[in-house]
Length: 428
Image (spheres, rainbow, N blue to C red):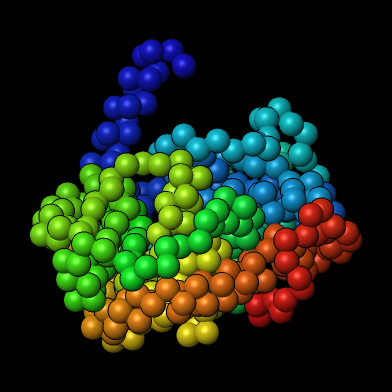
């Protein structure tokens, strides 16, 4: 790009990000909805390639879900291509992602587009995809949301998709509450990461415990609720030097005031560390596998990707027993934490919907779960069950078969390549 173009783009981005969040979204929707053509009335999705469009090079949960979707389809022999929207949505683009389609590729004709972009931005995403690729294809929205009902600005997005998929029953119910469509539940194929999450060595057999909390402040520090993790750890272990809490966080600039409070809370615990590095995905997985317990006292999750990753690593998860992760985190394979429902008030305004609710986890119950997991035998048994369960339900074969059924196409020999799991019931 010409240097002047770089300057202009940087200026426009800076000005855009200074506008109020609600104003930005409303302006985008109004303009993009008016100029974006509707998808084909009679699409053909029973054959042809699947284009996965999303933040394929972004270091975020939505970026990872798009990458998992693309990799699962290709793993199972489905012709699938990626289209990266990271730059379009100012999401950054440092994560490598193979199998991205060239803008000159001939991907016209029948097939499907899996849009891993939430409803308010569907029209903008479609404008960023080469128009010939969209004609004749079935367009699926793959949407995640973290509260029991979706905001009003999700409504227009339904007009641009033929069907909606959701990564959990919780998100599906939230979308269905809007009365537009009944979404299909399609769990993320997290078992594709089983190799990088495979614990290379067993956890220590002593009485010490290494606890990990992972979150991204750009996804709302209030929702991720790391201060509750610090307090639960303190109540469970005090300043016992044989126990240690690691808070792995990123994007402090998204909420400086909240991060200041978190830094102060961590500094008050001599056996706690705040790690603010941005790490490659494999390094994050190694971090998970190097700890004994994952602690996630979130107030709500659309799916709970980090919880699923910990289970794949054979590490028991202590997590709020509400929202998306209840699809797979039960008392048989982890430690669901008791909670009460309170108005969803978010100081970052990302999820500020006081007319609906989210969870306030019981910190004393979480501390009791942590104390119980001080027993290495208990940790090992629960972690082994968690890993087996995650491998069984999050395989790429289940994802591909479920998506193929939604598209009305035969799975053929999908899953013949290096099967990772045995057959398991699909979500309904």
